Image 1 (cartoon, rainbow, N blue to C red):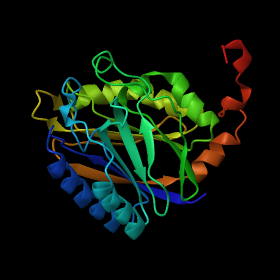
Image 2 (cartoon, rainbow, N blue to C red; image 1 turned 90 degrees about the vertical axis):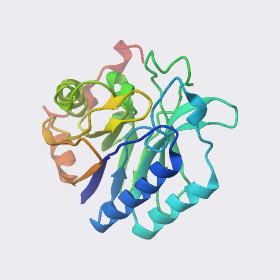
Image 3 (tube, rainbow, N blue to C red; image 1 turned 120 degrees about the vertical axis):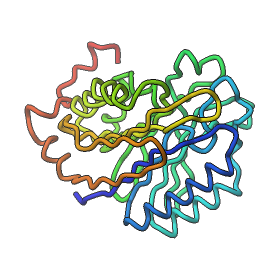
Image 4 (tube, one colour; image 1 turned 180 degrees about the horizontal axis):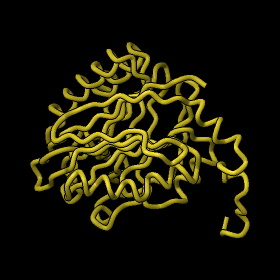
Length: 267
């Protein structure tokens, strides 16, 4: 398999400043494209900012700004993963991440597991979707989703090669967030033989929250491939050797999924 270039964007995302956040996102997409990236991945709710109790910042999926991201995906032959608080036509509010790819309809992942701070305000998504770009199958989880191992396994069983996990995870220092991620994200990668790529918001968001800026790449062998800390907007590009997946998945003692006894665990 080929090598894939992934840019993870640590971003400051103030609440109720959609135009500002969108302009910064466009700027970062163009910068990632200049690095010949295949994927550019933004934090959870980067376009709207994160303030669960204030759903006034929810945004409908509008052809105006979405057309601009579609244009950029086509122009640069890049997959763009960007997030927002979505106000659906039904009136429900979702934590949503969008996927823009050249000549494909906009895809959407709605957060499945809501934290206790989010559940009173948001609705749960129900689709464990897998997307494809340049021969790579990938899934998306959002922040709290990553604490449920069965979701990663479900994505791996659907042939995911990479699981992207954008975060809007406040409080704590970057070091504390790093320690937390290393406890569970490395396990998600190792147990399921997938790459895991995570990225968080950074700094104060004008709604009383402060985010430790961090991004992390974990290899399918469970080892930490890269970690980056930033206190303001910063992007980092990683080159993934996708042949590592085949190496692990053809190893009898390093690829566990084929030997799961799903009938004994309630599936």
